[in-house]
Length: 335
Ligand code: NAX
Image (cartoon, rainbow, N blue to C red; front, side, top):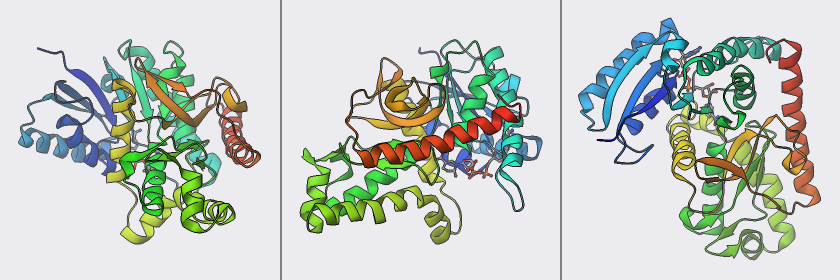
């Protein structure tokens, strides 16, 4: 029999945790042949909710679910882990300054990085979902010096999937036929959703947009005034319409990210925030979203893409924000 893969989920008693656990235990993360062992991490106030989810997991009688543990101690929760899904974070509350938010999250992701360094499996892979996701991943990686930096990533797959959804409707092509969309930069309102290399049903997306919307100028206007802000601010739109933040879509994107990282990308690129190697003038060491492929279990930034002046400008703006966050956490002693 196949050895179970150990998966640590932080914030497992929260909303995204609840949407994630059942899909993972059903086999959607690693496929129908891989048993999973779940280690749920919560803060003391969240432990009962996580324990309740664990009871329901038992009641689902998932054949692939080997074991579930609930922890309120990071060292125990990350011991032996192969995959860490870091969902729990400190949200921004009224009156909180950015510095307070960074300090609160540094207090979470620093110790979790140390726990990963101390006890995770040699092949550990981490995705940070909790916001500010890119900078939280940077903090965790800085506290895990023995773990290769490329094992730390942050989630921008939700932004990527949101972009696919918007394009499918506007171009009139099934979402599965759209390839090579990219999200660059920070998982924030400054992100740059880029369709300049994208194709739909094998045809250039910019050309299809021009044909549908009445010429290249109209297509460009739609991209700048509608598409980019709608993707970048989709989280706020969901809150306004649903009355609560994105949950199932965030869990789904987290599953897509880890699935493709472990098992490989098959339909062109995807997007993930990874530690920059200096590609595309993104300073080495910051955690920024790029177009990526997963080859042999590792993310590779898609090399050699031509970027026009507009794209370079939008990427530079988002990267400047990431550098600013990095400088702020460094000044606070969190790196
Ligand atoms: P919830 O507040 O429902 O759940 C968060 C859970 O984390 C709570 O149960 C809390 O007790 C727990 N937690 C807090 N600190 C912890 C710690 N130190 N260790 C373990 N658990 C801890 O929020 P939810 O809706 O599940 O969202 C979770 C995070 O995802 C938030 O930070 C949110 O901003 C972020 N998101 C990120 C997205 C992305 O694309 N990267 C999109 C969705 C979401 O907004």
